[in-house]
Amino acid sequence: MKIICLGTSAGLPTKERNTQTTVLSLNPHYNEYWMFDCGEAAQHQILHTNIKLGKLTRIFITHLHGDHIFGLPGILTSRSFQGGEHKPLTIYGPVGIRAFVETTLEVSASHLNYPLEIIEVVDKQCFQIHDINIKVGLLKHGVPSFGYRVKMPDIQGNLMKEKLIEQGILPGPIYKQFKNNAVVTIDNITYDTAQFKTESKKGKVLVFYGDTMPCENEMILAHDADVIVHECTYLDGDIDLSHKYFHSHFEDVKQLVIQCNVKHLIINHVSNRYAREDIQCLLSEIEHQLNCTVHIADDFYTYELN
Ligand SMILES: [Zn+2]
Ligand SMILES: [Zn+2]
Image 1 (cartoon, rainbow, N blue to C red):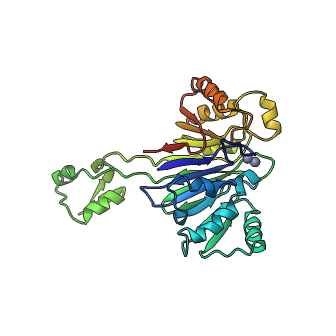
Image 2: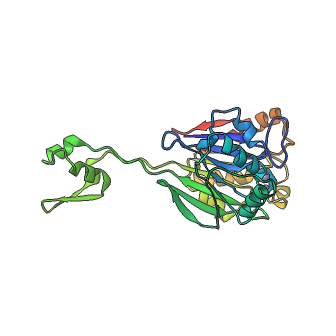
């Protein structure tokens, strides 16, 4: 799996950064891409990658500020001509996302050649896509802004066949039951199947945040996450000012990752007042303050999860 940052700027684009777009490649679990927010240059940025719009199956919108949604009409219409024909697409987002999409398509006389479903989400909503669990949390940003916690399925341990054979349990369909169930009963003997399997591995947890200042829900979403993608509009300076505009300061994000035991932090939504050299300097200061790895994402920064 990969997280690909295609737009990492806050509010306005700069010559180096475009507005918010992040893509999750689910390969090798699924041959699909999910997008989190869709900034203005999303489809242009995709042209520089090997992402195929026909394989983009879900778009999760965090909130309706323009720097997070103005790329949607272009992505949706281009998808019709770039391998998306007849391939369903679902958009998730706050109330209003349906009106935005439907109105834009209607007034521009745009017709999609694939089924489009739009789902308006609410706080604490949980749902499943394939065997992946999604949890939605309302953040604090002046307008409804959501975070999405994505929990990949646990990876089951392998069967220890020699141990089963030792017990007189020979290969056959019964092995499937040992793999898939917690207990199996044979001839009135109940077996705890964990004794016959290597340890299972917890599925990775990834969290994609919308713009926010600190709030309880962002902690709930981040708990024990393997990687979070979080805004940090203010990398330094006045913390009160960042909260006045309902945004996060680096000190806020630092507390979040420490308290929630996050393993990797990707910072995006960086204010356009920071030049690339400033960011390098800040990153070297920041890294020492955290117990996790951290990256301040440029456009096209890619993080690979094993
Ligand atoms: Zn924003
Ligand atoms: Zn915003």
